[in-house]
Structure formats: structure tokens, C-alpha cells
Image (cartoon, rainbow, N blue to C red; front, side, top):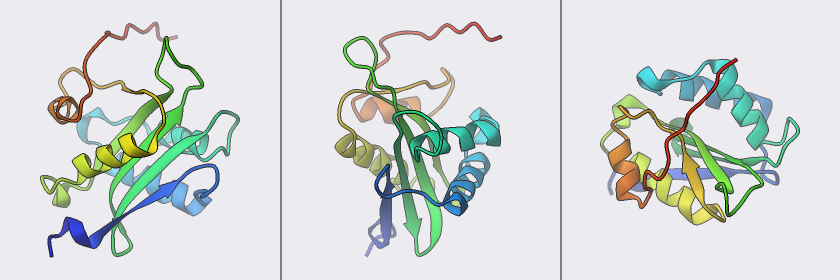
Length: 151
């Protein structure tokens, strides 16, 4: 049996909620496994709290791939409440534990995300991020550039 076959994807949403322990564990995992393109732990935690509906908003989804009880991959999706002019969902974070890289985990998580989320899914990704090719292979396309005024 292949390594990926022995892993499970757990899905969390407004009905199957993350505990505060799970939120902290997942935030630490994403922070530790996002490489040079990572955000602060505070930002990651905020996206998880939003997805879990622990803070006001539409919520979202968290997908955790686990091997036994160890997180080896994670995706955070926040619902935007928009459609037609912006995507209904934004894939905020995806991370895979380095020891499990190149085993198809990111691809499996993206496939699961695409099958679970209703409506369009957007991702903001650094133009130098090597995962761009993976997203393109999964049907994502670069349509716009983001310009941001940071205050």
C-alpha cells in the first residue's frame, strides 16, 4: 500500500468544528511548513478562526491530511460571500510537511478542496512560488494581478 493510501483527509467546517487545540496545532503546522512565503502565526490563526466561525464571517473549510495522528498537509479556505465578480472561496493556505513533499499530498489536498467547495476558488500566490505549476496542473489560471495598498 502506498504511503498516501494510509493517510486520511479530515474536513472541518461550521458543522464539524475545529477545537481551539486543533486551531493552534494547525496554525503551528502551517507556520512551520510554509517556507519562505509564510505569514505570521497571528495571520494564520486568524484565517483558521474565520474558517471555524470563531470570529464573525461566513466561515470556510480546513482540510487536514493526517498520517496516524500527525498532520502532514493542511489547507485553509475562507468563504468570501461573493460570486460573479470575485470568487466565492479563497484558498488562504496550503502546507505540506517537508518529509512528505513530492508524495502527491498537495495535489490530493487541492483535489479534495475542489470537490468540497462550491463555486470558484481563488488563491493569492507569490509569483516566485514553485507551487504555481501545481495549481496550473489542477486547473487554476492566472487571470489578474493583485495590487495592494498596505496601511
